[in-house]
Image 1 (cartoon, helix red, strand yellow):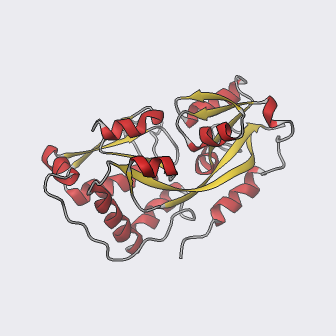
Image 2 (cartoon, rainbow, N blue to C red; image 1 turned 90 degrees about the vertical axis):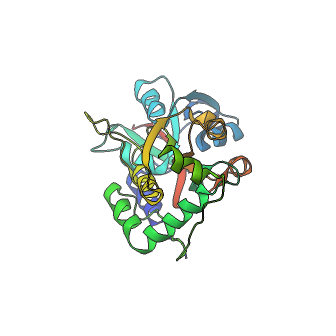
Length: 261
């Protein structure tokens, strides 16, 4: 069975869901959201005023600077970025809006999806995925994977295309603890970044991380600017209709972040 949402519940307690800084009418607030994100979708569905920005880190900056009243971001990012001892100690999470799952997006009918699922299967069951998850504090969010999945490259498929060019190109944005750089470093690290390296190793190719406009992620994949998008991508009906998606690998939620009172 899937891993429980114990991490989400624990973070709920830490950041004071439905208790800290959450008073006031939602319709009177401007919410900073990442363009093309699940947070933007839930705000739009509720008829809230949104300030769409390039990524979730910028959404937090908008709240910290006072140019937006609140932000809607992923719970996993909130756990890494807000509260005592983080980059934004004066921001708190007040409300969980949704629960969701992450997956990797590839081109329609891509055999790369099979490779990713096989790597998920192998790394989950040999403990590698949990070891990587522990490194970034997301171990309670990972989802159990089936055993013994395999893959076979299709003639003229994406796997052949990637192996011929010798490089797996991954589209992403800065999103701690999944994809980010430490101060003074040019190396992308994080749970998603390290798992993507496992796929590149399986394929026998190098890896390149490309920062994209997340709102244009589907076009980036279809145009072959990137081979996949791997950045805490929420499984939605729109995404599943446009892309071939991997198995879900991580649980998440969308949360509201506001200044602490």
